[in-house]
Amino acid sequence: MELIEIITEQAKQLAELTRQNSELTSMIGKFFASKNTDKGETKEMHIPKGCSLFQRKSDCRWEARIMIDGKQQFVACTKNKSDAYDKLIKANRIKKKSVVKKDKEFTLFSWLDHWHAIYRMPMKGTELSANTIIMDLSMIRKIKKIFKDAKLRDITADVIQQKLYSMTQGRTCEGVYTTLKLALEKAKDRLGRNVMEQVEKVKHARKTGRALLKEEVDLILKSTINQTEHDIWLFYFNTGCRTGEIETVKVGHIDLERNEVFIDGSKTKGSKRIMPIMPILRPVLERLIKDRDQDEKLFKLTINQIRTFYKRIKAETKISFTMKDTRHTFATACKDAGIPVEVYHKWFGWSDDSMARRVYTHRTEKDKEVAQVWAKKFEEF
Image (cartoon, rainbow, N blue to C red; front, side, top):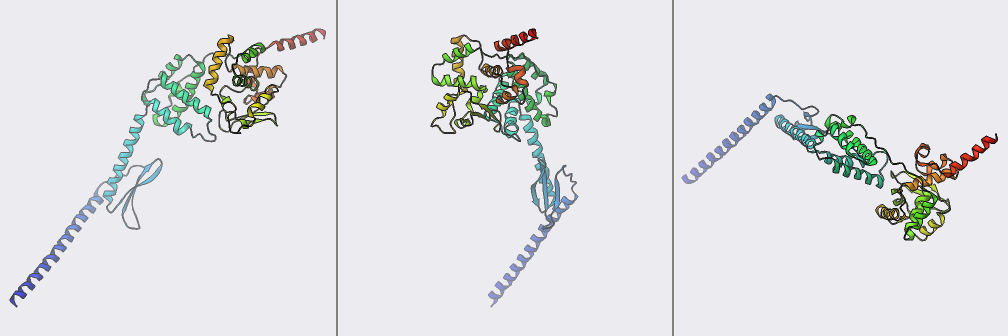
């Protein structure tokens, strides 16, 4: 009996010690919790602009939100206000560092790539055509070749102006200027300035195109070495299409019933031009589109391949001309044929007839004949 009483007494003592230990642990936890709460309540807090720190009504916990790209985003939700505030300040500090680092890392070259991908490609209202994209990338490559890769913030108007003056090709210079103007205008928010506002557009004397004589056109056509070359030059001389547009013409763009040629998406994906099929070109197009799929390209050669045999023909014939002169030739032929400029300027894709009058139509023997006829009538009068 004595042994049982001893064991029972020891068990009661052990239970009492366990109860006291549990109460002590609880008291310690409440003590530290109150300390943390007191710390959070007494700590001076400065909430960053645009950010917020508030106590939720549902569970009374503290929620922190930070401003990113004009919108508040969730950061943390904790029991103590101090913890939520610390996480808010840390997140805001990281955001500031990332923005500063991002701006400092941009060089002129990396910004051009960033601008083209973010701002240029997804243009509002209309999508760029493949030709325009190729031209954009060509200008960016030209800038990378001419300019030294410096930090975006270090680029000055004087540097850009000097490089523009050093360029000899007028059209390329204009393309570089336009590309830089568009790209650096978008960098104004990061730099606080637009350096292109101080840069003058460099004017170069443009090479004036000319209309080829009938004898020269015939010689060029005779100098072709195969049927494909002959068809391409005949198409150029009788449609007035731009050099690069020939790649966009598909079999489905040839409408023999309506006697029209469509050139689709030459500058933007929505742009279209409609030109009549001249009698000399009709049998050629009938042969080219026969039994072919509508989505096939009318000519399978690339612009680089066409330029290759252009150089060969130019060397063989010793005729001084450019591929763009075929466009001048067609415009002048339209004028000599008596087609009103108000009609054929639309075939060339111009918004009005001023381009035809100022640049593309040239004085020919036909004009001299007309002048002599009117001079004779004036004398008779």
